[in-house]
Length: 192
Image 1 (cartoon, rainbow, N blue to C red):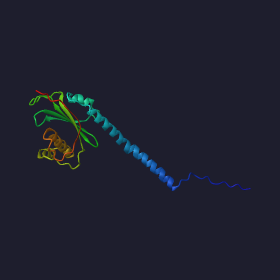
Image 2 (spheres, rainbow, N blue to C red; image 1 turned 90 degrees about the horizontal axis):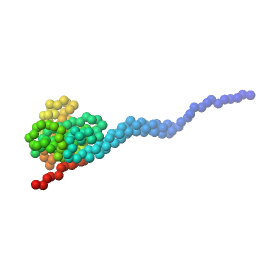
Image 3 (cartoon, one colour; image 1 turned 90 degrees about the vertical axis):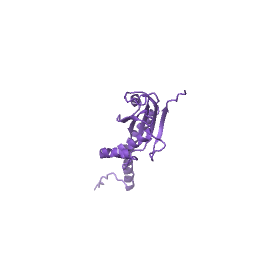
Image 4 (cartoon, rainbow, N blue to C red; image 1 turned 45 degrees about the vertical axis):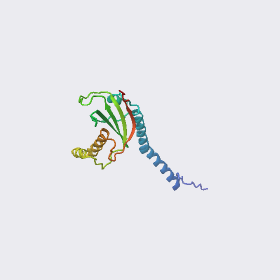
């Protein structure tokens, strides 16, 4: 009497099954390493936008920076004067897919050069596209500034400078700069 034992067979998969499993694993990996980080950044950016929409005239820029939900805590701040001689401060928040400019008109009297943390008479928040890789400034002044900057910073210097000139100067002529006002709170004008 001979007993024949069949050899043990390992799991067998069809080609279609392997393709489906490989596709599902690839989708899961893409979701974890690509989609999830983008989703988290998107949520943080929407939280940031909600917080800047709460800014009101009368706030100081330092108090506003504490109230704004900004995960990086790294900003660029520029203090200058606008075309009417009023002191202004522009704080720049750089996100992966957009740049936000928070533009404060300060309550200091024109000509007063002392800098102190003071309340603003208006606040505006602008969203602009990210810096194009080959960005060239619209003005000779900003091109000269960009040429003096480090090569990796030149486009940033030119881009921020062009927007600073636009916000502080004549807003009717934007030289093709694209922007969106997402919040504005201006103090009411006093009637004499």
